[in-house]
Each structure stands twice: as C-alpha cells, then as structure tokens.
Image 1 (cartoon, rainbow, N blue to C red):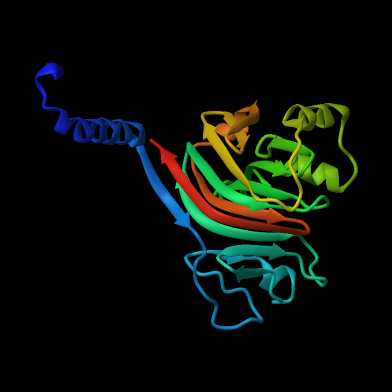
Image 2: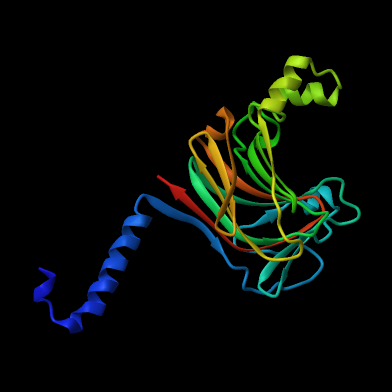
Length: 241
C-alpha cells in the first residue's frame, strides 16, 4: 500500500510511526514524580527543596541545612552535627517502577536509592530495599527480609546474631564491582519488577538482584540516602502497571 503514497507524505508517515511506537512503549506506565530542581529557595539556612520533598535535618541535624538547590540541581550533604546520614524523601506509591536520575559523587561518597513502606511494621523505619552506589561498588539489598527485619536488627544491635541470622543477612545482599568516574555526572536507572532490582549506569546494565523482600507489594516512599555528599538532578519515577 505504501507505493501509492505521494513522497511528500513520507516524513509525516515516519513521524506517525515514531509517535505510535512511543505511545506503545509508554502504555502501562504512569509518571509518579518528575523534578529537574529548576527553582529558587526563599532562604539559605534550612532545607527548602519544595515539590513534595522532605528531609530528616530537623530530627538528625538540629535543623541545619543539608539539602541545597544549586544551579538547577540538588546538592545533598551531611552537616557536621548530624548523628545520621541525610535522608531526602518523597512519597511515591508503586509495586513495580523505574527510578531514574542524574547523579554525581566523589571517591569517598555514596548515594542510596532506598525504597520504604512506612506501614510495614515488620521492619525498622519501613525499609524494603536499597541500591547503594559508590564509585567502585554497587550494593543491592533486600532490607525487608534481611538486616532491617526487626528481630535481626535487634540482634545486630545487641551483638547477639546467630550464625543462621548472619547467613540470612548475607544472602539478602549482592555486591558488584563497578567503575564510575568520581565528581562526574552519570545517568542512573533503578528498575524494580517483581522481586528483582536492576541497576544501570549511563545506559549500561551494572547488576541485578532477586530476593523476596524486593517484591513487597506496597512501596510508598523514595529515600535518597547520603552519608557524606551527593548531587542529583532530573529525578523521574515511572510506575509499571
């Protein structure tokens, strides 16, 4: 049938095909969060990220600023008085999703993409799973059935973990060596489907891990967990229905 089309319609036909393919690729998904941090703060002494973001600075850093909107990106850094790493949070509800962003960390830094359900009472602070990124190592953890399960966490704190508990925690963690240039921007995608979490950097697969806690059905909070410092930008969360 294409042979009857006038050549002037060819560009439109190509565009239509592209549009149809794009719509098909996006079907069954929903964008839950999208943020490029292109805004200004009204003051410079306390966290004021906006767009639904919250931090733990009030409870963990005596209210001191630990998140700064700087030149269209979010700079997260731990204050000297903080007794805990920085947690920058946003409410997002999904079972399966892809979380993508640009990020930059130094050689001693790390960035955690931590997923939580604050209604899950079998674990400490709602922890479900996490992808922790350093320039030389990717760590994926099932926190729900591993180290944040209440009885296991209590045993760790009391230094009374049994060999069986230690073995269980180890089985809920996967570490993968990677090589990321420090202090350079990188693209990150963390995909959760069922009980598998997969991570890619700059469009290249870096590692995946399958564990039962990752499949927790009612994930509700995204945490950006930072122990020293990190930059993030262009955060996007897409739910897979």
